Every structure is written in structure tokens, then in C-alpha cells.
Image (cartoon, helix red, strand yellow):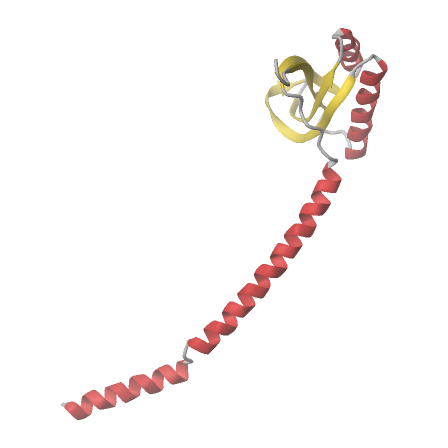
Amino acid sequence: MTNQQSYYETMYILRPDIAEDEVSNYIDKYNKLLEEYGGNILDSQMRGKRRLAYPIAKHREGIYVQLSHQGDGQHIFKIEKAMRLSEDVIRYMTVKQEGPLPAPRTSSKNISQSQNKENDENTDSKNNIENKDNSVEKKTNPTNEELTSEKEASESQTNQET
């Protein structure tokens, strides 16, 4: 088995009415609990608020969090017990995965900031290109006055021929 390892993936859904800073507190709480119980966190991601397939505890939406981790398997029961006792976790599920380990992602704040910078740079360069294109169009496209004078000249020429 080359590079094929087993790890666990836990997806849990938090109530949709939780504030964003509290969501990050819950993510940190479960990550710390997992490490205390002997697990090794590979990746932790907040997937955002999404519509549920069916209502759960009168909620139609939920905040999804995905947690990839390794361990001996004994830590799963303990972390799921903590989730079961929490009123803010409306669903959870842990699945054993086989395959290459997931690469840890950088925080979404760092990604969004760098993407915003790239988008700003791309927008600026597109605006510069569009401005150049507009100036080229102005030079190559005749004005309305030039068009009307050419049209009058061609009409007078046809009138003279007949």
C-alpha cells in the first residue's frame, strides 16, 4: 500500500442562528477536544450555511463543519458524546476513509484576502485593456458627422449620375 492510510472524517452541523464568532469557538472547542482524546487533526473546514434536505429540530438550514483526523478510533466515541450533549450540534457523522491523507488548508481569511488582491489586480488590468480598446475604437470608428457627410456625398454623386 503506497501512501494509502486510514483516517476519519467527521461532519457536524451546527444550528443556523449561531453567530460567526461562536461558530469558530465551537470549531476550536471540538478540535481541542479531539487532540485531548488522542486524535491528530489533519484538516478542519467550515463549509458554511446550507439548506438541509429535511427539517432537523425545526431548522431548515445548518452550518456545516468538516473535520479530518487520525487516531486509534477510541477518540471518536468521546468526541461524538460531546457533540451529542451539545444543544448547538443538530447532526454529526463520522466516516472512516481509506486513501491519501487530505492536505491541510490555510485559513479561509488568508485565502480570501489573497484572492481579493488578485481579483483587484485582474480588474485593474482589465480596465486598462478596456480603456485602451475604447481609445482604439474612437480612432478607427468615424463620428456621426463624418458618416452623414459621406452619405450626402454618395447621394449627390448618384443624383448626378442619373
